[in-house]
Image (cartoon, rainbow, N blue to C red):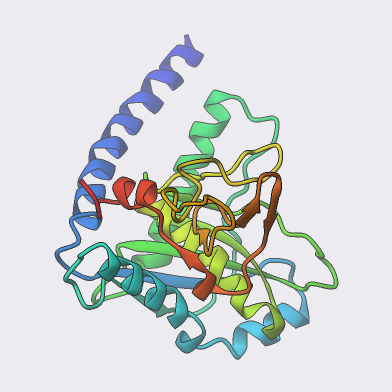
Length: 256
């Protein structure tokens, strides 16, 4: 009886959340006004390295992400001068809730609700111009974490949990990861093979109609790598080597 009641309550809550999420998606993908994005740094590992990096973080270091989206939007005929504006807020003391790898369906639902609550708390103290999208930037000491946990961006909830390296040598790569996860919040899907990370054709190619097909000149931002030949791809150096391909443009409302 209690289990059935708990499931019923969760389903009602999810229905309410889904209705709000639909409205949020309509507002953020109309591309007739600037979408405000809040960037909230988090010390992911409690290290002094991450703390020092966060203390020196500026909005200028996040500007390449909004510049990239503005440049790509113009290529698809979006007339808005500033499609996305990213504002840096004070660091958060608590980390976002983590999903238990063994969580079942109810566990995942509960995690999503906790994550939405975390987002609500993060923006609750902002009195004016609250961000429509919240990016939680989790910085790691690269000496402690040579590889990072998987980042995520959620259109339902308009938020991203982005794992980044706390070092200036990774600024360009951090920008790529941040742009990728931010585009997830607008509805873009991943376009690489999960077993090999190879870009999928045609959706994972920035220029799928290029003839000859290889080598591609850019990485598709949601695929992550530049395809040079069948079975061979390389990581881009920075966002200047990335593009929004037509499949992604359709998903986020830049193409009909």
